[in-house]
Length: 100
Image 1 (cartoon, helix red, strand yellow):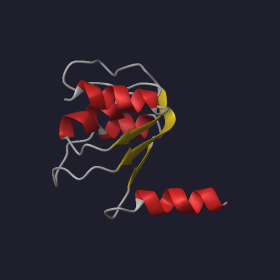
Image 2 (tube, one colour):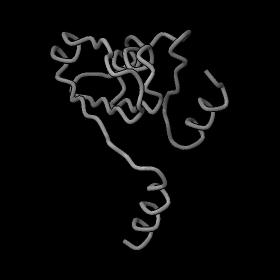
Image 3 (tube, one colour):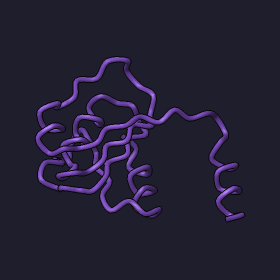
Image 4 (cartoon, one colour):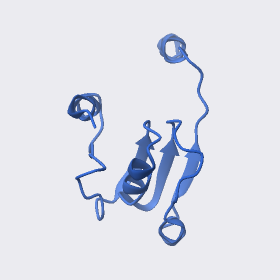
């Protein structure tokens, strides 16, 4: 895990940035978790950081099969969604947003 990436996330609006290998995420109760790594351990750890009625958004492409804490998702009524993205679409999205 590159500590620089965690610092970058915090500098750009993240309220928490966790190292899935060493940081505990239980009980944080954040509103949303966005995974851009695709690492199974990060997906599981981040999911456990989400509070009731929160959102888990999976952006990163990783393993085809990831074990998820299904009862945790259901009991807390957490929404889980994936995002399919293309290469080099971020600059276009930024330009489109600037027009609005």
